[in-house]
Image (cartoon, rainbow, N blue to C red; front, side, top):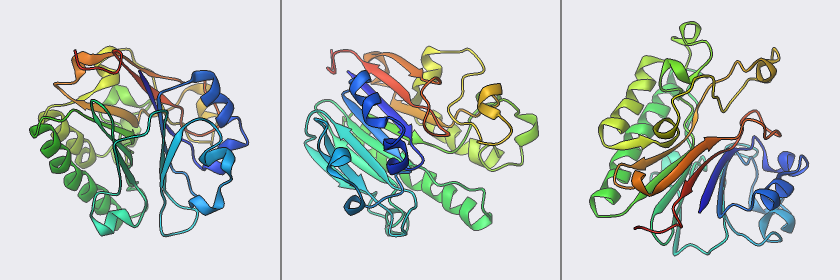
Length: 258
C-alpha cells in the first residue's frame, strides 16, 4: 500500500502540468495534496471524480489560499475537515480520514515567515495538534501525519543550515516543536529508512535552486512508533516536477497490521 503527499502549489495549475497523468502512472492507494488554492466549486470533474478516486477537500475561507485534498481509492470510513479549532480550520489546513488500519492526517502546516504573529500562529498549531494525535494513539489507533510541515528539523535537512538559523522554517523555536513530537514517540519515516544527506522536498523558484539542489526537507510522513514496523520504506521523489515541492511517500506492508 503506497501513500503519497505533495504540496502542489495550486491544484488547478498542476493539473495543467500533468498531475492526473502522474497519478495514473504511479497508481497510489492514497494521495494527500496541500496548498490546493481552490474551492471545490472552482474545479472540474477531471479533478473531483473522473479518475477512480474518492476525493475530499478542505478549502480556506480566503480565496486562492491554503487548502488540502485527499484522494483515496477506497472510500474512508470517516472524514473530518479541520481539527475542530476555528482559528485554524478557517484556513483549510487539515483533512482527517479513517482507513482500515490507521487514521490519516493530511496537513498544510502554517508558514511563519511573514511576521511574529504568523510565527506564533504556526507554533500554536504545532502545540494544538500534538495532544490530538497523541490521544488517538493512546486509544489504540495507528496514526499517520503527513504534509508540508514548513520546518526543516535538523541541519541535514537543508542545504545551508548556518545561513538560515534566523529564518522561519529553521529557527530553533520551530525545530524544538518537532523535537516535542519525536519525544512523544512520533517517527520521521524518511529518516528511519534513509540517513543520506542532500535529499530535499522544496526549492525556491529563484536562483536556479532546484537545478543546484539548494533545498529544504520540509515535507514529512510521521507515524506513531508502534506503526513503524509495518512500513517497508519511505521516499522522496525529487524528479517529479510541477511544483516548488516534490512528492514524498511511504509504503505499508499490504496495508495490514501483522
